[in-house]
Amino acid sequence: MSDSTAAAGATISITVNGESFSLTGPATVASLIALRSPRPPFAVELNKTLVRRPQYDATTIREGDAVEIVTLVGGG
Amino acid sequence: MDPQPLTIGSQSFRSRLFVGTGKYETYELMRECLEASRCEVVTVAVRRERLFDAQNRSLLEFIDTSRYTILPNTAGCFTAEDAIRVARLGRDILEQLSNPGAAWVKLEVLHDKKTLLPDPVATLEATKELVKDGFQVLVYSSDDPAAACRLKEAGATSVMPAGSPIGSGQGILNPNAIRIILEMLKEGDADYPVIVDAGVGTASDVAIAMELGADGVLLNTGIAHAKNPVAMSRAMAQALDAGYLAHRAGRIPRKLYATASSPIEGTIVY
Image (cartoon, rainbow over all chains, first blue to last red; front, side, top):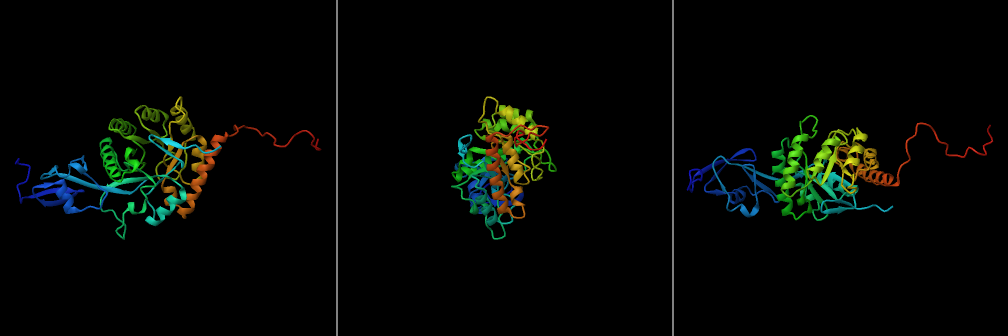
């Protein structure tokens, strides 16, 4: 396991939608989504790159990562 | 003179009015306005989750996604990079909804928060990148004909010049610029869609845009902040029909002096 991938049970500090968030490693986008349970439909970005649904399980979240979870709102 | 469908990229519409979903007092009112406007395309924004109303309801509970084409915007972006990110996020959501709007983006790359005018350089840069990424780009532009030409050349599916600044209600400030844009973008390509995108304050602004030869009008605040938004939605729809028909009917030229409507011959006055 690389330095940046958290060992099992370790706490990972990240930001989600600009706010600090902690979760227990090892973490993936799928496990973060399970914790946050955003209301569908939503889209996820990890460090400014879109993560598509089929990649949620395989995309590891590391210490210091920035995640955005977005949805559609009213706009012009 | 039956109305012709409006074709933009892969889609055709009977209605030429595109209506935004922002700034309504309630979601119920928004839904009623969309209905009254007879629009088939609605714009939405992409934002961080958990923006629900007081009753914890979300926008999409009030938009029939099987009926409306949802056009996701990149509003609030001030760099090409951010606009591209938002466009990709929006597409990902619309693909989950199986909405035809997934192919589209309403690209806005703004220069500053006070004018909300487009940054022409960053807008062009983002257009090129998104076209390369397979998007049909409907791009918000200023009313500068040169900027509009550059955006079309970059592969924009539709160029959408502003009548006046977003939400300003000033109407079509420079009709001559819009006319020149229409002439240049449609030269040898009559069906190229040009949508007037911003600044509409009332029904006559919509009629003027259509009389100039625009293919459609996109508006939001003009309806959402009217005293009676539902009545204004109807007015906008009727103005659009009137302006569209008037343009196709062909107006008389403007002349400096009068031309009598009644015959001069046979008058009893000498």
